[in-house]
Length: 228
Ligand SMILES: Nc1ncnc2c1ncn2[C@@H]1O[C@H](COP(=O)(O)OP(=O)(O)OP(=O)(O)O)[C@@H](O)[C@H]1O
Ligand SMILES: [Mg+2]
Image (cartoon, rainbow, N blue to C red):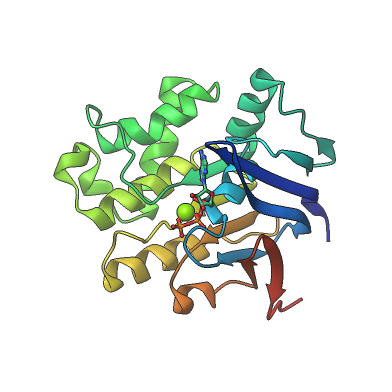
């Protein structure tokens, strides 16, 4: 089983009015392709911080991140933008679709940004919308979508470049239980032997649907009920 993402002695400190906050303390972990990981922990335990480092949005204070055998140089912003676009699909809690663009445009843009032609992006987006059961919402603007529909479009946008890694930070945080269940059904269906899915959640039921449950507590990462 290949270790596609590895963190080595990963540490993250924040400084607030000269006071040091040691959020992540020397974390070591290997994420394997084909597995789904949930990330739990109290509010403020560092879940978003860890996910933002894994997806190259934030940088660690110390330690290394290795993706597909390449050690990430956090100073190489250009390369990291390319790695993010090639490997990652990212889904956030808040609605973060572009408000002036339709559902299909929101999905397509991520493809165009990755170097696909407009035609190809639209073609893939149409297929994705169909898969997500949202073909009839293709021309809707974000304000004309329900919360559940918006999050499904966010899955679509994360999917357009067939990512090896899907990162979702409390993706169902703003949804009611029915829509959250629907969302996770779609998300977990994206499991494949070529892919790692990592999501943070406060919901125990959804956390337990993963293959491996990770818990962040006092800056340390614990792996619980790993089914490996
Ligand atoms: N830019 C920053 N500057 C200073 N402190 C920060 C910064 N960003 C986050 N923190 C602190 O780091 C800690 C971890 O924050 P983080 O957002 O990763 O927590 P979380 O586990 O995602 O919480 P939640 O469940 O509420 O989303 C918190 O104590 C937060 O206040
Ligand atoms: Mg968070």
